[in-house]
Structure formats: C-alpha cells, structure tokens
Image (cartoon, rainbow, N blue to C red; front, side, top):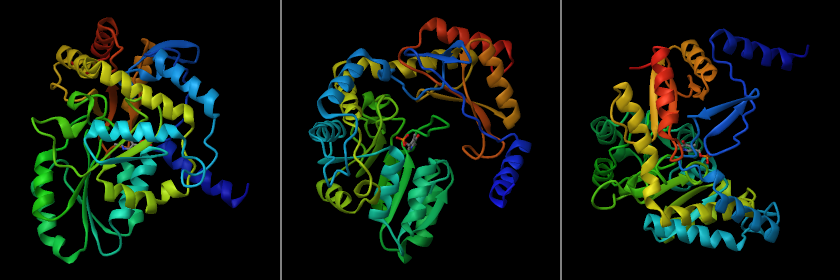
Length: 384
Ligand SMILES: *Cc1c(COP(=O)(O)O)cnc(C)c1O
C-alpha cells in the first residue's frame, strides 16, 4: 500500500470508530415525496425540495424545451459565451421577487457565498458569523482573508459586544447569517441584526437557502414582518424549494455590478445548463401563481409537531435531537424499516453531542404520510 492510501485509510478508520464515516446510498426519487432505496419504496422526509417542484410536470417540460432549444450545457463562463438569454429572465424575476435593483445567479449556493463574501471584505476587514451558519458562509469568510468573529446562535447582544470591541479597528464589516437555519429550522432575528448593522456601519447578508419558497409568503426571511427587512444582501439557492440548481444574490445595482466583475466563483466557472435555468424560471412562475402552496410545508410540519408535542415550527425543518451519532443512525435505519426516509445529521455538520434526525416537510406530503411518520416515531420512542 502506498503512503497516500495509508493516509486515507487511517483517516477513514478514525471516522469509522467515531461513528462518523459517511456513505452515499443510491436514492431513486421516483415521485414528489417517494424515494426508492435498496428496492424499497419510502416516503421521504429529508428532501429540501419543499414544494416538490423538481417533479412538477410544467417544470420538467420547461427544462426539456430549453434543453432542446439551447443544448445540455452552456458552453462557457457567462463572461465568454455561457450567458444564455434565460439568465436575464431569471435574474429579473428574482430581483422583482426580492424587491432589489438587480440579481446575479451563480453556479450554486455554495459558489455564491464563496464568490460574494471576498468581494465585500478582505484583509483588514471584519466578518461576523452566527455560530450555526452554513459551512459555505464560513468558507467564504475564510477565503476572504478578513478577520472572522463568531457570535452565539441568534444572540444579538453577543454580536454587539464583539462589534463594540473590534469594529473600529477594521475597514468594511459584513454580518452574515442564515435566514432560516438549515439544521435547526429556526429564524435569525433579522430586524434586530439590521439595526445592529446600521449602528456599526456593517452590511447584513442573509443566506436564505431554506427561506425562499417557504417563509414570508415564499419571498423569504426578509419578508416576515409587516415591512420588508433592511437586508442589502439577500443570498439564496435555486437548489431547494425552487427544485432546480444554482445560487443567487439579490442586491443594489452597484453591488451586483461589482460582483459581476470580481466574483471569482462566477468569473472562472461555467454558466448553468439552460434546462436548469428554465426549470427555475418556471418554478418561480408557479409559486407566484399559487402563493398558498408556500404555506403548506410549514402547515405539514405543524401537524407533525403538534402530534408529538414539539414546539410550533417556523419553517419546514424540524430537528429531533438525539445526541449521539450512533443512536441517530440506528433511529434512521429503524424508520426506514417502517417505510420512512429520515436521514441522520451528525458532527461536523452539527455541533458535537447534538446529532439529530432532521425531518423536512413538503407541500406534497399527505396527512396520512405525516401521521404514519408520527406513529413510527412514537413506536420507536423517538419523540412524543
Ligand atoms: C444548501 C445550502 C447552501 C448551498 O446551496 P447549494 O445550492 O446546495 O450549493 C448554502 N447555504 C445554506 C444555508 C444551505 O442550506
């Protein structure tokens, strides 16, 4: 065995011992909420496809048509030849939806955060992050070269303390938070953070990967209050409730123009496949036509939580924290034997000791699906 293989095996052995080794399992998502694994049909409660739009016939047809018209790939970076006319429509729709001057679509949500953050902060600047932020916000912060400070989850006073101590010594300052937290399903105190940002001359950025399509009437976490929240940088993904793929930033004209020029993950990466762009455009059109659909995932989560005596959910993400990684994986297997796909989430995705079942709800789940999962969770002593 080579030293390279040795190196890999040693690392893997350690993960195995800690119950943290990950394995990909082939999953055939054959319908809106159906997933087949190992020849078995399961009801999936772990997709981020909150509106099941990835299986919507009109969305599929739009992708098919665009693929026939423009081809399977975009053929280049958007600054060279990959800027298909579909981009204009998609970006204009998102900007209108988010009430900003402009929008910029990236290859994915992850690439958006890697591209945007280093355009706004660098060496000598300051980035403030909630400790439970998604990994790619941290990755964007790290590659920017700015000083990164982490505040306790949703703790605005802690963020203020850090700013009081460190703001003056830095140039620009970005406060970045998940709008809806991906593994906990709770929501950032956006208006309070916006006020804090104004007080300390900082720029607030929300990552609404789990907000678009499901909270704020589908427009996301900036639209939860009576008035739109003051968030100059609204980022999100087209890969979740929109059922397609890609990421976006909605912001003012000068900010988007800067990012079009300097966002490295955009400049040096190929444009999205036309079929994907067309799917996202059609999905947004369907949401605008039927905004009531956006409320359904949270209504379904609420039915589940009420039955098990869990707190009233504010998003379609319900964490059932079991603590130890191994226990979570056993629970997931037991649920699968009963016909439900609910995956376990372990460190380092979540903090040590908080391994959990992350249950997510779709507009397409039926009452019978939800009640069946409730019964299985009760039988296994997992909740309720
Ligand atoms: C999923 C996710 C991303 C990444 O988006 P992709 O389009 O899947 O790359 C970014 N931020 C948060 C909070 C997410 O949950």
